[in-house]
Image 1 (cartoon, helix red, strand yellow):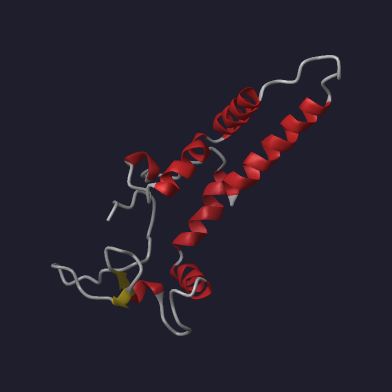
Image 2 (cartoon, one colour; image 1 turned 90 degrees about the horizontal axis):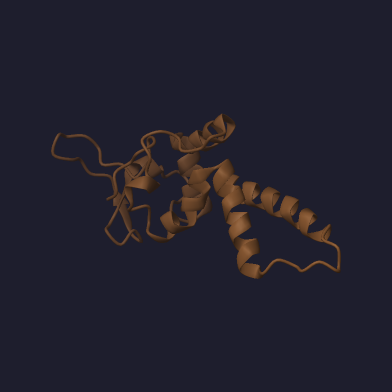
Length: 141
């Protein structure tokens, strides 16, 4: 994932700096190291600093569901927007064991516990309630 790669790159660069500290100089405390790494990632991609808490909260906070791509790097946006493609969503559904071969994610709805799927139904306007994600800023369910 993009944020993991960014974090790894920033960590490797910082470790290189740390290894250059002479043995006679004090080594920074762990809290300082951690904060330096967090700040480095946040300065490059602020959304990456939110991602872990967003995942843990099931993306309920508004800041976890921005209306537009939250990344500074446009290539990251292009890469992640491929996940909006229904065929990609279906492939992930099959790979994760959420769908059987021949099923489509867009034809499923999930109960409130998100551990059970049934065939898609229609909403009040007659439109299909889809499990597929179609873009940025999706409301929390």
